[in-house]
Image 1 (cartoon, rainbow, N blue to C red):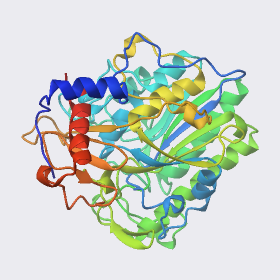
Image 2: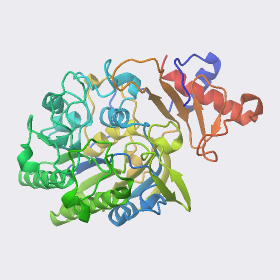
Image 3: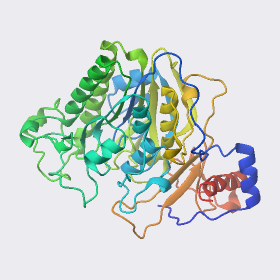
Length: 462
């Protein structure tokens, strides 16, 4: 792993030129300046933001995955806009920080743990709740503070697993993600006796269906943050597998078998089909924007998958492209035309995009935002703003400060540069980042690219 500690200034001249030429495309938004266009005419859309767990870019069929059955996901993607260059962080919580807050991780990490989303932070749910949306979280929370956090961060209703990540807060029973799940709702755990033989993903789906019905009855637009546990470890049978009936979920979490990963993906897809069918049956399919991110980082490295004719290993926990490249598609029948989009998207871009879709602004109290809305791209605008550079700040300090410095990098559609390095990576051709290009072997254009990407990094830390 490349490690860096600081992001030193390069030439001030190059930095000034970079800002003048690009307008610092991966910009810091002035919190006093609205980042939202005028509201959409007519009623505001319902919005469902989906982020699975440990499902890399190589898994879904619509990206070129060949090992798994994902017909519902593929059909949704084919009817929507597919983004081929969406990027997150190499591990779960850092990606989720960016997604919900619209901020890069150097702004929102807690002092004690990367799961410590401080109570002074605000999320996309706060924005929509303030605008009159009914809000719901279903699936894995993976932050801290339990009920206090979920309420503070803008969720009216929730049905989740993993409500406490800090040791000082965690009074939960043994965490079970799938069979006989540990479900937290309304500030308390559901009785274990009620969870016997149940499967968490079915509970989440039933909860969302009920939430959709209640929101429609109240004639309120809704926002759902749906974060399936699938397909995080432990790899275990689903209710559609004959082994489910006798599977013992009380064994230690490390007891799992990768043979079940394929059926877990199949069940993930099945539930996506169920969710889409609900929208159609409720008559709200054309008034609901679905933003589907297959996973929060790369697939677990125990998993090997066939992708576009070759077998590759999962990249979870690695800063190379296989650890950060995310499968993403936006679906909104009647509004988003079937298409493919090759522009860069970072997870911080979802907050301003969702706010734009809802036609609401972001108050100064949210602080500096790093996202760039891609809403105009979804709507097919010919002059839509597009991100020119992707940035990431990744610190593996899961339980507090440690000796490992953060890893920082910037990239465009072809090249990637780690901070304080002079070797450039042509990741478009060197997917595994095995052959960095030393400065003395770079072409003139590549040398310019090195300076530009370092300027992107420097701009966030000056």
